Length: 620
Image (cartoon, rainbow, N blue to C red; front, side, top):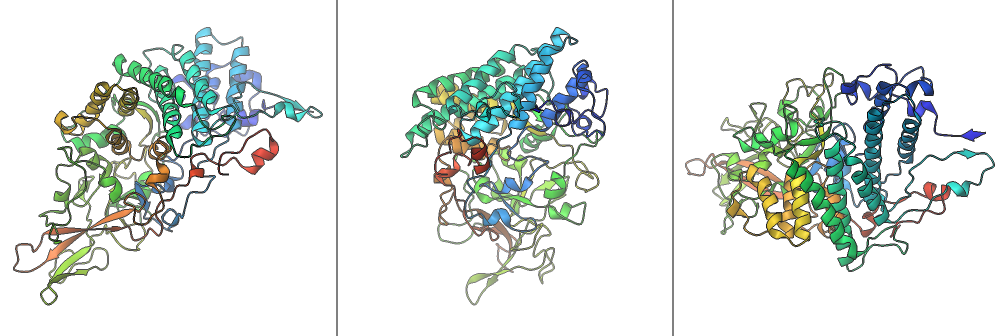
């Protein structure tokens, strides 16, 4: 009996539609086909349209940390947001499980390897089609290997299919882990080999091309360089004797140089630029993520489509409570003060919000939004804060009123039901909270704006949203280039790239005269918030265990809220003004705690039992 992965049921699960046009390769309707009848194998490899449909299935199976269509709760597991939906799971994390973000998807690797072999064997394909299909599949394989190595460290590099017959020696199919460096080297060499196989003029935003290959190389080589440098600077470096985990420090500059070169090839091509359409810089930044119309910034995205019926429920799950278009859900992922204060003021000063005067009294504001005046415009494009609007409507964020008590010469905090008025007939608690325990309303004083769909109806269960999920965009490439240049000692070049990104947010060059590694890292945090970079950045810089140290008194491990109040003080100039209180987010019961064993995900006992040659990761 012979066991092969030529089983068409797994390989060809997308082929319900016999004809899929080239432009439909990644259309939402082509991704989720589940046919009742499986086409014969030899029919598939004769037809470029069917081959494109197979590729579309692989695109749809690409691993993601989190996304718009899956496990959205994960966005509330780090230090950018908490969970304000039903239940309280992410807010009670005592630590991260060692299996957190584990991945071992060799079924997808095997399917892609088989695809490459079948394309090679096909006598019916035109040479140009064969070249493009191979390049596309190799890109997807490199992408999967990157997702594997950044989680697991070195993994077995398998680049062809193998068959097993009963009676064969199974040890011949048990492959040991390659070193971490070997996997990164493989990714880099694969991307080098295929980039010229793509047309330089490709403008697809949803399909692999020359620019996605360069973007992935820029990101992957930057990760490798960081690991080579910062892992070896730790008091206790994380490594295995065989190099399955750990990259020699001497390799760092080589990786940084490769990252910089890949980023510069994109930059110098002139094929992409920062999205700069609207005069309002906050609106412009929001549109840079959501707009699909002539968006010059997006390099590669996972698309969704209303006509195709491929939608997601992110807006339904996260729209502010007062704007809900359905009577359930909303307000689940709510940004925290830690992130909000990471956005600097436009003069370059740190972003700490002014809530108290030196004498201990409140700082009083005429309007709730005034506390955010002269802030980095990316804040307004990412977060809905007190006084902000969405879809042209005010989002009513007010925790209560501060009533002056002449007897105690202090304020009494008065709260109540959502949407309630105080005895003066004016608003007491906003419809949008924040509230101590009410689900589906912000617990932090903020709402997420990034990825919310501005289209009426997109927050309904029966409708959904077609906002796309961006995997690579030009701003990241500039920041990759900046970091690589900085690490290579060229601070002038690095500063120039960072200044381009900051200028779009409203910063003048004088706001950042000299670049430090901490400022550069903060740029990544605020520019790329909620785009699946934060966790991996802290891991590759080897500072996650310091930032998320489990200490309730830590300003970075503890998660904070900002609650606004209207002042009730009749006859006083401060009456009717607004004050703010910083506090640990009430629904959070544990600070973030990242252990050394979290730098690499655990390889399960089942995998090791099936293949005893697999070496465990450190601390597991």
